[in-house]
Image (cartoon, rainbow, N blue to C red; front, side, top):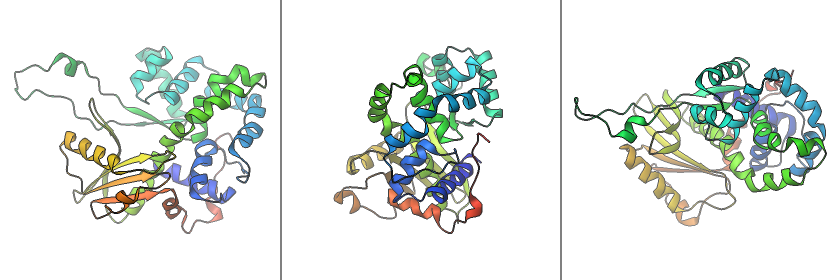
Length: 313
């Protein structure tokens, strides 16, 4: 459901704004996605942030407060989820919440449609000896589900705006933009990862997908692990960086597969800026490479009826 909603928002954003290329589409969507606004994508992103968000901070903040009932637990948890590793228990700790009030806040935000749980696919650790005991560090490991925001803008607000809210209220934006320039690629990488899964599954639409999403356990994290009914396994990594991806990234994901004990049908790499010539020469049935422009496939045959309204409405 969440990935379908993200695709709807992605298409709606394109229909409203028609950015020049897919890199711009992804970059601007990661900030303004879900708002249902018309954005002049011919203008620099910093100008748009100033004009549409920073200078309208009070107006937008009132709408955010209305969505969250101005509840401090809700607000702290949203910030912790936006800037952390997305794991529920670590977000509770970061927000200063226990399982009771944290769980209550989590349920509210789910019911409000601001977040959705991404369930872990990690299997509980078991000793090979039925009567044996696990090592202490293994036994203490706690499987934790993660959270995804249902609208990119909400995460942007709690990732970048909230930490600088006092200064922004006083029309002081310098520290915000310093922070934004340092962390903008890191921020956008999650939205790029989510969209990459949408594109991968779109290209596998003739197969029946049994399971898809990120994978994490105590030792390994993989951006996308997709399994089809005919037992094909697709493993993908996504890199939203300003340089081309080389063979070392391919080797890293091969190592991760070996640690998990899986032999992928295909390894897939998604890159903002493309790939080295050496890596491009390795493309085969075992290795697929996608850059930003390949996301045009998600915009085929879309119609004006697919425009969706802002979550603020």
